[in-house]
Image 1 (tube, rainbow, N blue to C red):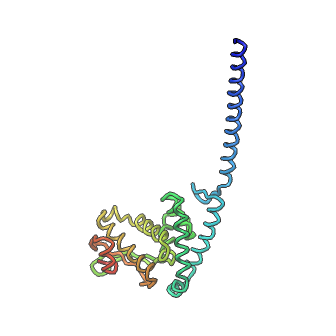
Image 2: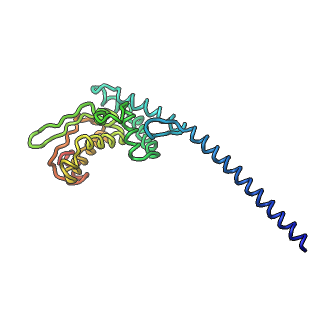
Length: 225
């Protein structure tokens, strides 16, 4: 009986040792696999890394946005009318791509798409607008913007443009939440008109002091309620 117990104990110990060895081997293999996986990620900018597949899509988006922004202002409307389906496709690919990144990374990627360094504060505006002016128009202090074509036609670029505008001119700090919301709705009303109708009105004029009536009423008032 004692002999059988000893043999059973030896067998149990053998199984435990074998299991521990397999676990150790698996851990090493997993670590090596994770290290290899990390090596497949490519550094893009700052803390942003992309897989090989993401980098391929990113390069294509860079080329697409560069092409869009290379169109002369006088030719923008005809270009958009002739390439509406392609622009919708770029919008969809860009939105799907950005979903894999944090909001801060999305903002930096949107600036990089415009070929501008995100570390340069002044670059925030130039990444999205060909020109901008803060001036009085009638009774309203007005921000007159002339967006580049990517900001006019790609939602992610328009969102990044708003963040650049709010960051540069500190709307919330200067005007409070109520007025900032009105400026926000005016801004995206202009984008919606450009994006949905592709009938470009030229500048986007955001007027301080317009009432905060919500997106729908802002659209009904053609962006300046």
